Length: 129
Image: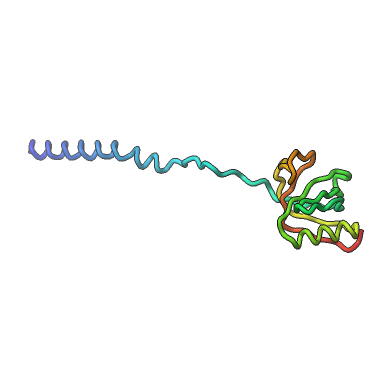
């Protein structure tokens, strides 16, 4: 009986030690690890206004309708957006664009903008001024 008790005690001791030794491995795996090299993207917004300038470097200046008089820079990479913005500039029609505020990026020839810069991927051109 005492040998059986010793075996049982020794077994429980070994199992207990293994649980203590193994638990930190599972505990550290369950904790969320920090992600490096990623950042949250700014929210997508929809703004409208009149195009004041279209640049050949795929930048345009748009005077917003609301708030009135505020100008922003829109940055794009698609040729069709370039054509729509040029048409809006010539016709003085209202455009609506969808994009994300990318903060202050540098202009194509260096320096800094004194306006907010939006990276856009959609433009709607309306037919009435």
